Length: 276
Figure 1: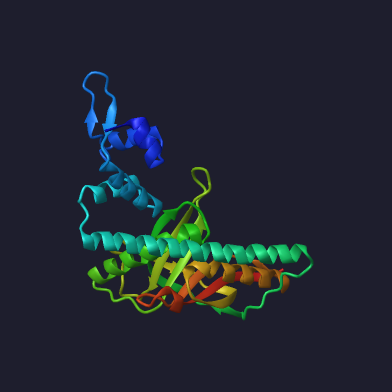
Figure 2: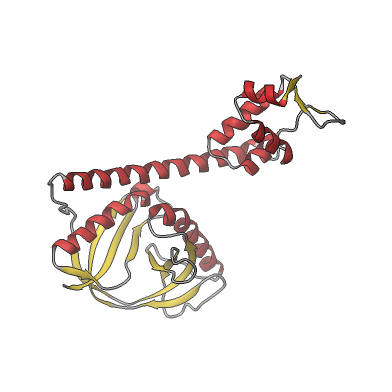
């Protein structure tokens, strides 16, 4: 038997961590002295601790690890959890890679290279759209906050529309607005599908009109939502370079999205503008 200090030292974890694992029922000691409350562990528990640390290293929460270790997750469910975690990590890698490219561009700009946009743009009016939409609150703007929320929001909206007898078309639209209440750091995201006059509000969604826009500058983004920040930055740079000013809330129109993998998605970025 090993004392808690010995077990912690050999297992390379803290005594406080072991006490916490005991408290939540994740790794109880093999024996607790009834008189002094000292915890003791046996050698077989090193393998258990190793599995716990392995799942923690993959980024699982302690409640998820507890369910796994207690056998409450079968192989199919574990496979699904691992796949979801892999998707999350891949998205974060894409976000970090995009951020690194923007950082390199800023460094080159400081070193004398102009921040010139190379994207293809189109200036055009935007018609009004009758939209069935649902919304959710996110911590702030940026793909790292929006991407994990907007996809599931579209999925839920699609199911609600189908349940209401509405068959959404292939195109969808997303819009975003800042939230003034609270600390002012949050944002509300809107997922919507264009619908006809025969569609009214239903369970889980509302029907509203996205107003017409006199002039917008647009560009096409190909690929993952994790890298859409690059396209937006390039579009904003083009607007500044060509003598326009922002004049309204932006829109993202998904011309090709689900069920295609994100690397095949085609998104039109739409930013209302006026001449500066």
